[in-house]
Length: 102
Image (cartoon, rainbow, N blue to C red; front, side):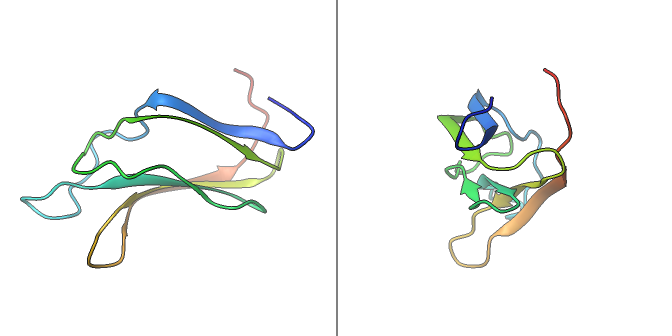
């Protein structure tokens, strides 16, 4: 979707962005995942944290506007929120945007 302000590169509604995450908090705890989306030249966007889930479902409707186009670097990072220490990276993927036809 294109507009005068930029390109809508990210949209999800009631979707599962990750499944079967590793338990980064140890045997008796579960991961508290959230997702950060980084698009070069734009502010980082973040989903809310889903407490205690290895199969998070993000139920809010996010529609984030980014500027960029083909060749723009994009990273999607699933993090584990930790209240007493630094958040852990669970999964990190990145790549350059290409023409995508859906």
